[in-house]
Image (cartoon, rainbow, N blue to C red; front, top):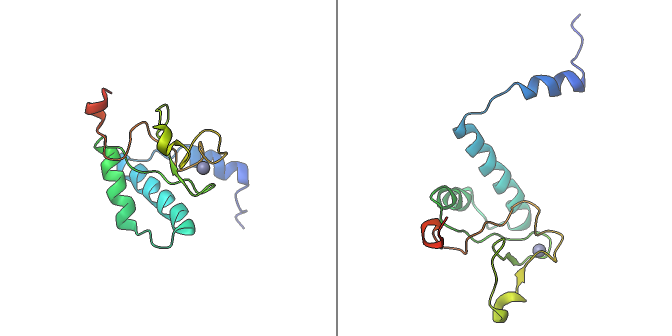
Length: 115
Ligand SMILES: [Zn+2]
């Protein structure tokens, strides 16, 4: 009788799996969708796919903090004082948790920002 694989054997074989870019994208979308759906039942998979397309095109998207339930300030960017207190920032333990903040404000393009 064949014995079941140990956890270490399963982890070793998982290390050998090379994902294609399409598989990585699909995994990223599933992870984000599953995570966001827990906190916001109105989120659809289409919403997440649209956001992923924007990110792939180098366009900033709004990133929601599931810890403090505020939108995250883009990483490394300053927010105007008038809105700074209504955004999640590094003071929140959820800021550097998934979904991670990008460096762009929503709708801002990488080329406009200069990188
Ligand atoms: Zn937060």
